[in-house]
Image (cartoon, rainbow, N blue to C red; front, side):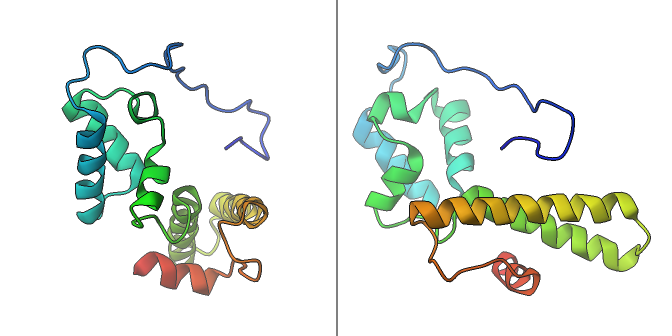
Length: 152
């Protein structure tokens, strides 16, 4: 996501290889990768953590290049998808942590601003996911509701 309310241009990211084919050094087959994804999700790992594990431990640089689908799509087909998108949950966790911090230090103006910016990003993502149909149309962000979702 972009940096919304700063003069910074955002973070640069790495680029994937130009080839859409599976690299020759990947030892796991497509079915084995799907099974590993299922096992890791059963252990409670998030899609980003699954991707890092596959990259670092099994040498799979890009799951989509090997299987033709992203990890979240594979999990949805296996009916093990997330209730809420991962990036939205991460932002809600961040907002809950900032609110908890602000209870101790009420005059921390820098973090008050950070909370406003984070909640602005949450509302922006909620609008996007409502359009895409990933979240119900009547769902909206409330700090109390976010705290209950994050603590589960």
